[in-house]
Image (tube, rainbow, N blue to C red; front, side, top):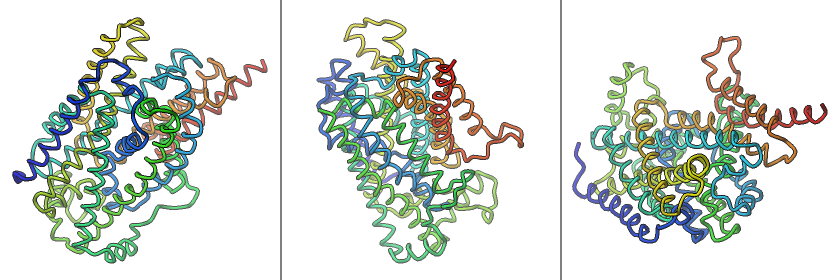
Length: 501
């Protein structure tokens, strides 16, 4: 399939605009401070849109509708947890980082517990960024492949090189201002999709079918931690978002781009105000698509035949969850008028680019501050620091492209991302909270707590590798919850025992 000239033109214009922004800000991007923190000159409203754009990635754009199409609104509970994490973050984390003056989120971990804590958190962060970029690259490739037939690998490589280009040129200031544009564009895209589906199906019909088939359910309210109950997703969301706002360099670095702590805190609440209702909108899109294809089953037969052939499953045996991530791209391909399709593809590209550009920039900052200046050359001139940042950005972008290619074929974007983020986040947040909440816990106790936490994370994450009698009874989303709690509690307990002795 080839896209009409009008749609291709819209996409090309969007990509050129992103590159132009990078070129524009490259004129003043002449120091490592400007590259990493935009010299602290970003207004709170723009920073809030930047955070919102990072949250609203291609995982949200495709994964949320895919989950509500194939199941129900259970993952939406994650979004409902964000205000609780935002309150803790604005009250404690933002003042802490602004007062410390450290651009790296991990410098204080070395001051508290030694180099091992800084290194562990840094490695977890970089692996999280690679997992996030890989998942998003695959999501965007899945969609554009469905619309154009272009090979997924080629899509990932071309889009990745474009993101690397404007991120290297413009630094953090280009990242934030491109994210402002991307936030507006992808919100408009979501509203456009909802309008088109509702026009064809009717709002009342979506509500009727959704209620009839229990599509609006948030999940079980039973205190069951072995399945994805409301409480499991709520706790998972709270701890993941504490990680985002409290220890993720991607966010911490942008606190320093604000003019003051008040503006930085304001940006977090603006992100919450923007993201929660728009997240709800994407879950509604999945339910609306479910209704549309339940009413018009012949229109989705082509997609089901394709998935049936790929997975060697009879069409009659296919479940909605087997092709949930592909439904929105398929709808865009078959039901969106010319011109509007180009706008929606630009919105999808923006959903991918916003998260990855900030991830590349923050990962490069971690490489400079926590690796190069720490272990290679401490007194590096400013001009050479900027060069290291450029090289590190390119390397992280290329690694993200590699991860994206390796993810081709996964069943659910959201499930894969949630599992990977849970594995890497638990240890980071646990060590940070252990040092942040208690000043008397020392190095040895922190090491024991971290080792115990990592063991628990491995036990839950890779439970299928253990004999059945020793398998974890917990849902995989409990990884970050129990990993974090165990590090904090065991660290405190060991310190008490050492103090008594």
